[in-house]
Image (cartoon, rainbow, N blue to C red; front, side):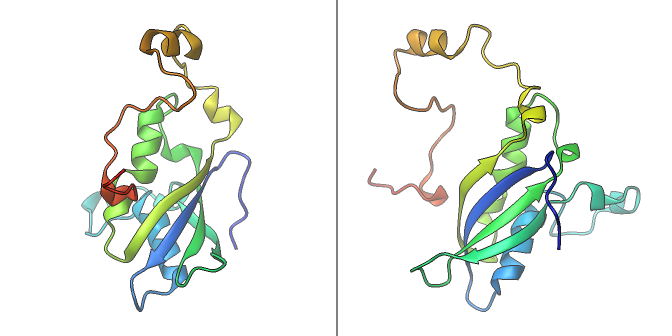
Length: 157
């Protein structure tokens, strides 16, 4: 019943739940684990209402032609993230959730970032073209990470 806001970061995850886990539960688990949820009781939970900060799975669609695969749509409030920090945003949304036991497989399919948040990112000091020229890399994304097979990238590739 959650209505998304113009200021929410919206993510679409392809979810394959473990046998016996309903898709709604898997979607809710992704939203919780990638925002304020934790597997243990934390004494500070009683100090602040986490409702303002939690991710919410607001819709789930089955993937056509795929058994037991769903697209879980998750909304994250901007208050959850540090302004100007791409690192904070990505580690919050995808940093820990991919090893979650309730899921057989998980892949981030889409991420929508509101303009008001993207305006807080400073970006490279000289612009993307200068960065590409320095690296001599064109026609592909520039990544600063390790691609691991457990994230859905085949080992052979």
